[in-house]
Length: 413
Image 1 (tube, rainbow, N blue to C red):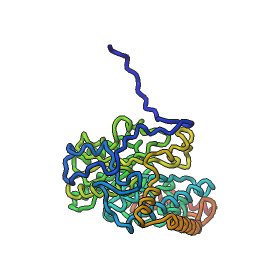
Image 2 (image 1 turned 45 degrees about the vertical axis):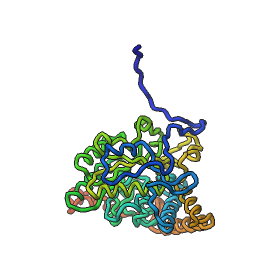
Image 3 (image 1 turned 135 degrees about the horizontal axis):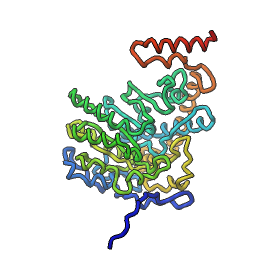
Image 4 (image 1 turned 90 degrees about the horizontal axis):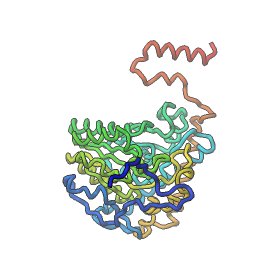
């Protein structure tokens, strides 16, 4: 019997007022996924793109072949970086609500991705981040003060007032400028990695996009070039379940895992618990070693959850249950690492609370200092003439003329 076809529209499993429903999420028991050798063929490890690499179990014990066996000091450092990221996010969100900066985006619930991958990569590796990788900037040496000043567009702003708040960069830290045009960083990362290979270096590139950005053409162009030229690059899809108000199924995530997007091109995919710092670190180290040995690209999908709003311009209560994050089966990455350290006898609730108080204080001190370099309403202010700089090596006559006329207007002449 032939039935009439109809348009299939992906719909989330829960809307405001409904009970959170993550029944669509395929999970694997912690420690159950095998870890293949670095040189394994893509066709032989396709299971990694559908199963879920996990290290920490429900009792916060590390188990299985992907356990990186990091020592207690390394884990405490990682925990501190994640907590600092959250303390910064909390402060900047409050500041935006007070009208003191124009815009902000938090990484609440996704801190393990940036910190674990920052730890697994080498300092010479080039990073092409998205706008929820502020933890990566901190880990790579960007000061709280400088990140705050960028959001203020003040006289210390690394972007000189020419970028939207939260679009940082760090030449010293090998972190490329964030772009508001979604997925452009993927082909940029592939191109950088190809150049590194041409030069015979062992540096690799890494880039991050959200689940929604996998529907962009740049995502597919990047995968094609990476596969054809075996670029030494790690391409990360941070699947936090929501692209602003659009459920991840709209980008095809309910049809097949994002980690499987590269299989047709011969790119291995790893689906990893993005809220498990140990699992993210181990998967990243595996992919990085593979790339350095000439094995080409790896696509990693981090299964996580966007704990807050998409940005300060968004109200998630309009499109998802208010308590959905609390119901997310993979939990909070900071809480999970904290509990793991406690179980192992290397941490305590008292130490954790004391560290949080110290980090909040550090963020407060940095904010006080940032204000001294200017705010949206209080000086000192950027020199308007600077907008004509950094465009050409030598300023052409037409820009020089415009600059001169502007200065005349400002001076009242």
